[in-house]
Image (cartoon, rainbow, N blue to C red; front, side, top):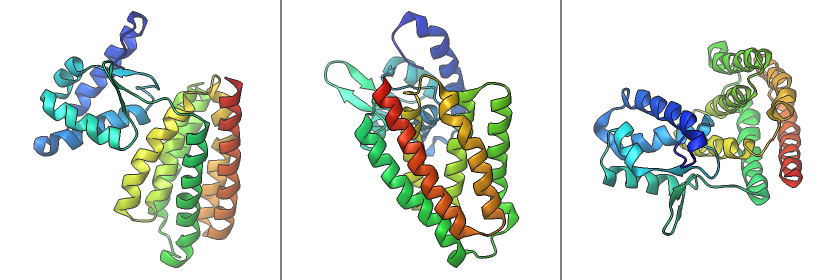
Length: 242
């Protein structure tokens, strides 16, 4: 991650190497959007925590873009609320608060619950292949939990919910979800003990998957609504405990 403190150098260099690997796979035709996508994924994966400062010098090198292109990527992410510009200081990853928790979870309930409830009308015979990414995410979370890698459990959980919304087959919803899961990762950083946040939801994700697999969409939607209320409550308590 691009942070100025010397103690963070190892983590910063590891993140920059990851960015460079992503760049090798980029199509250079839309440089600003592609650079923004790499940075957005870095936030979603937890490599860029709240308060991290981004360095133009380092990023132009590893992203292999001009300074103007990088600044355009910064503008795109600032518009999405995933970066903030501080006068005379530079560009930073934002630090969210309780109001953001409430707003983000209001959006989650509108999006996710409606997607699940609407499956009965849109695709009553949902093919098993459409659920495979969700099953993969659950198995990744379970494996990470066994290894005690709780941030990785959080990443798998975010992917699960992204794939859940993806069942709607809506490019616009997918675009909104990309920003949403990045903001959720920023909220997760507040938790001092990530196991307490993520462990209960591994089984709840599997329960949701089983309901979807059984095509019990109404019960899945009802369970998901309560799931999101519980998750919001846990995050708000974590913010108050800071």
